[in-house]
Length: 180
Image 1: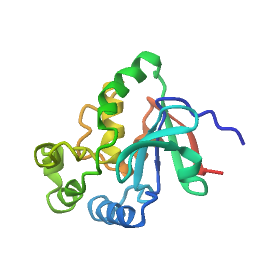
Image 2 (image 1 turned 180 degrees about the vertical axis):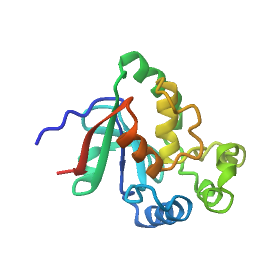
Image 3 (image 1 turned 90 degrees about the vertical axis):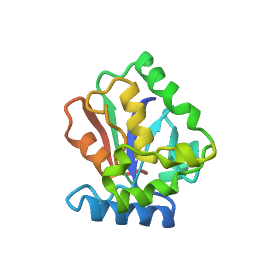
Image 4 (image 1 turned 60 degrees about the horizontal axis):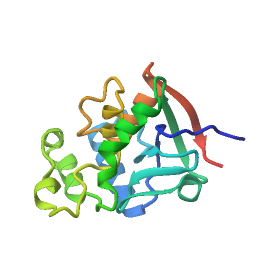
């Protein structure tokens, strides 16, 4: 089966890190018990085979090497074009190499409202930590690529992004299933 993934597609899957993935899963289940809890990670496609995402660091990797055999949902903004893709990437590329902002996960759990307004890694990370988690990075890309409904990307969780991929008219679900 050939799937036509393109730059600017957004995806949700299971976080490949057992520790980080289980932490995100716990937070999602506590915060949004009716959401698409199977998805604990999100990212952006930058080519038909490469991703841009926040794992232990913000980096690019081969989609199949990272997620073959995993459940994945992939969405495409119906109005995506080269200009919109470049506008979104311009905002997220500076995060490349930054460490995952673990303190934000605690905010998601303990003080959920604060994640929409605070990014402690921005102030206390000394430039080493990103100030967005994986799904917020994807949401930031969407906002600056001009996707409707992404004005507020802080606080966006992978399950919320998966729900948008499935249900929003502006986003076409181009694949959902096990990546093989």
